[in-house]
Amino acid sequence: MKALTPKRFAQLFVHLRNGVETAVRLGLPAKEAKTEAPRLLNRPSVKKEIKRLDSSDEQTLAYVKTGLTRLAFGSVNDAVALIFSDEPDPEGIASADLFNISEIKRVKGGGVEIKFFDRQKAMEKLFELDPDLREETKADRFLKALTESARGEFPDCGTDEREDSDEL
Image 1 (cartoon, rainbow, N blue to C red):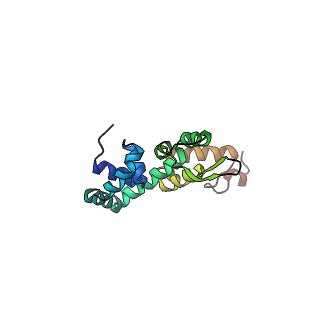
Image 2 (image 1 turned 120 degrees about the vertical axis):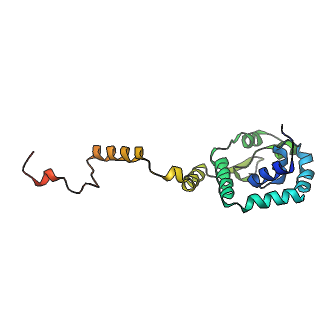
Image 3 (image 1 turned 90 degrees about the vertical axis):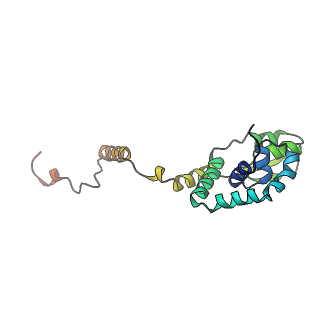
């Protein structure tokens, strides 16, 4: 485990936007994280680092992509454990990764209903934000041309000249 430094705290906080979760992920026990996170967030060096990171547009886009990646590919193990536990302990809940949960309800009869964010929508947004994924490569164009020729489609060629001539 790496040391919990103000700079590391600020960097992870900008990704997660949750002080307690940040402190827990950096190795503090949940009870200690609840008191330590606000203290760290009030430190001038942490505030300065958060402000510096937030002011970078490129960095902000990276954080958005990170969040969408967590939604699209994040584990649901902690949420499933929460569903199957009779009485979840506060320590376990505080250290659980519940980022991809959009809603939790207790239903009549003692059950728990958990709704997750839409993974497919998160992937679509990631696709929209990543120019490397949107850019059509030479291989993509070649494959498209092969597919169209196999179907008999020639959108860029106009009419087939052989149709207009008597020659075969």
